Amino acid sequence: MRQVLVLIISFLVLACTAPKSTSETTENNEIKNTQISASPKLVVGIVVDQMRYDYLTRFSDRYGDGGFKRLITEGYNFKNNHFNYVPTYTGPGHASVYTGTTPQNHGIISNNWYDKFESTEVYCVQDDSQTTVGSTTTAGQMSPHRLQTTTWADQNKLHTQMRGKTIGISLKDRGAILPAGHTADGAYWFEGGNTGRWITSSYYMSALPNWVEQFNSSGKVDSYFKVWNTLYDISSYTASGKDLNTFEGSLGNNKTTSFPYTINKETDSYSILKAIPYGNSLTTDFAIAALDGEQLGKDTTTDVLTVSYSSTDYVGHNFGVNSVEVEDTYLRLDKDIERLLNTLDSKVGKGNYTVFLTSDHGAVHVPAYLSSVKIPSGYFNSREFSETLKKYLASEYAITDLIKDISNYQIFFNYEALISNNISTEALQKQIKQFLLQQEHINKVFTRQQLESTDYTEGIAHLIQQGYHQKRSGDVVFVLEPSYITYPETGSTHGSGLQYDTHVPLIFYGKGINRGESYKRTEIIDIAPTISAFLGISFPNGNSGDVLGEVIKQSK
Image 1 (cartoon, helix red, strand yellow):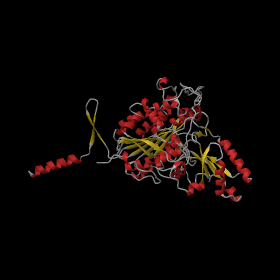
Image 2: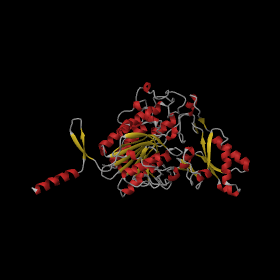
Image 3: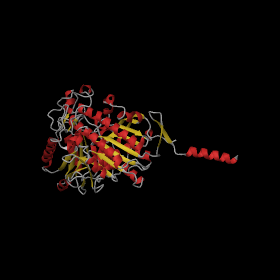
């Protein structure tokens, strides 16, 4: 009798401690068991370039159930998510999403900036010590060497003893390189021009993998040389302004800024594919190819795939926030995200992967359009401003070379000229500040002395300070009035610390993620520590964000 009881107890213990599986009911009421790993097999970070938060709500009625709506209804939606620094550009945005800190720490202060030590403009991922892999041009001379901190993808590599793979993908080099971090197995971007190939840098490898070569020779890229017309009847695009208007830029060889647009391989370069929604479809195609080619999510070690959709930015810059072209681009992107999620379901397994979706910055309405509806807005002539400032300083000091560079709304001093002429840097900062505040459309001015000696905790001063890097930033920073930009009078841009540039989506979805929504203020730098905490890995080494604990399911 005692032996029988021991056998029964042993059986019950084994039954209780056996690995759990989920039961999924098929359409034919058949039960299919899917083994679920303890940690996600794959984390997918999606950044939609230039996606304002209101693109989720403005086009909501037009989205299907499998893309943005699936992420929102089955995931966790933070509705009050913001960038906590300026400038709000692509390079700093991608770096901040993945490092959990701001340009003050990670060092990517813009897409391009004046390097005061090299006395030249540099690009955020430019690296002349590298060579292009996959092309004979210089488009692959890139690396993350200017990024001064780790990303959470780097920390995942360290945590898994380099076993977890990291692959970065974007039409833009900086959109692929900065998210993937320093230790990535590969970062791939699309070279337009006359090549139309996905390429990489010698920083990662000496030759393209077979799967990338096969993709490049598949004819997939050429298949997107076709007419771009609206996905639905154009009369249904009521969330946007009139299709034909004076606020939009031209596209390729098309003579009008209204649908349909002809995309012709005989007359257009491959670069035009970046500037239309088919570029997002091409990015999705390549990301799906990477899942198979790199065998992502095929074992129990967590892999990382970073995907940045760049065509949304090109379309936004060219046509503006209120355009039918932007609306159509997002309706098409919704379908591409649905396609990516469905592929993850089939190749990695539903319940085996985790996704977050956000953006690198928002965008302002075309100022010319805002002016037409009586909202204060306009344009700032940076060349005229530069000449005015230099003439003023020449008249005050009888010296013509006190300023080395004016860029990114920052003024860089020529320290050699100041020293040789015995001019105080602090005195010059104050004098320029006083002069700038008298100039039309300049709203605020901050000096290096202010930013280094004062701890700002709110407002635009705080945002500027968070984006200010002591070694890389300038000596005076100025801010334009709301909705004033340095840009052509068609299309739109971004870069400010105002709500239209800082308010972006943040949605978490998938394994280990609660369902819900929140209106509490969150910041872009909170993503990296949240993913790190969820994976149980160390935070990026410069992290200054907070863990969004409510999004993570608590183990029972």
